Length: 473
Image 1: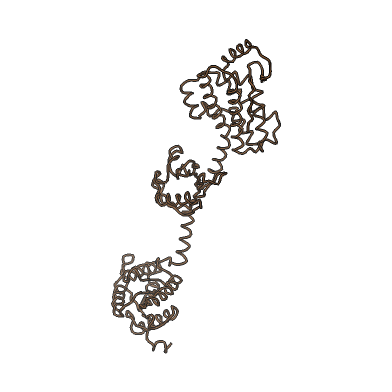
Image 2 (image 1 turned 120 degrees about the vertical axis):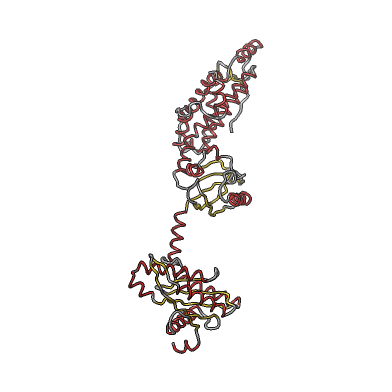
């Protein structure tokens, strides 16, 4: 806290004690002299008094404890004298507009304020501590200037406005390195990093986010997800509003298609930021592109559960699915029909015409079998030329027979492969749940036995499992 004083400041000395005897003529003379003093002259004349008062506060900043007195005062003096020099020159309308917006006339110039900010950052000052220095400097000047007796209110008002703009600009320049390093830190990450206000509008976005949205930061600022036209924007905005309302972080996934590129998938997290009073101050967000990871995971899942050649579920997926279907049938009371399909004559084709023809034949067989069943049924390749089909919610055995006849006809129809007709057939074994067995393992064994019975019966036919088959095996 800056302590105020009622002592008067004169152009000829730092402080003029109130207890000093003074005649009426002397007071009038001083008042006349003071009426012509400008704010720049006031700063230069009373620089030591201003800096001494500012120093009282600066020494309370934790980051300033390691700085000596000369280092503290020199930075303040340098900035005040620079500001005073600037105030002493008339400014053009363009300069006035630029400064009122908090922008420097020459942004690339190494100013006193930038030097000050770099030194404070190196000394370990936090952003809050750096800002408090400028607030104290502003207060020191304005309180002492206000305590003096000036009689030119219009001129004083203009100078005070320019002084405050200069302090704001100096603060902005001083914090430029903090801002630059902060932005560099967040932009060095491949992740999207952005900050939103308590109304869900973006106030900051790192370079990765800016590039992805393909618009400059000044156009992004102040917009929410819906304004930016992001996919699933309404849903994401609702999730964000939930964080704002509850103060609880939220994570999830969102898809985004930048320009005409392929869709990208991002994992994101919205994290509430609270101020010193515990109130929500902003929402910090980060999002990571997980498209490649998701593709790798999906490929791993597909490799573990699907046949590479035909794209059908593999043996592992089939057994797991059969177990689920059995449990579901137990609850519903409906039957399941399990078909075991083995191709007749495939080995001859594979040996005589080569593996390429054999592979293409298996792919076409898979497609024909799959077209014969319903969307709720499951077709799988167990390996080699063996396939299975799980028919769920079976009401009539006759329906199963009709489907199997259709399947046998489809597989007996010649296949066109590399310009040649290839002929094969199939033998199909059928077992029912719960009539024939109560477990997936028993069902698969029964269907296999019924398939061999069909082969022994002359191939290109089907056979239902019977108790007699169990007794034989």
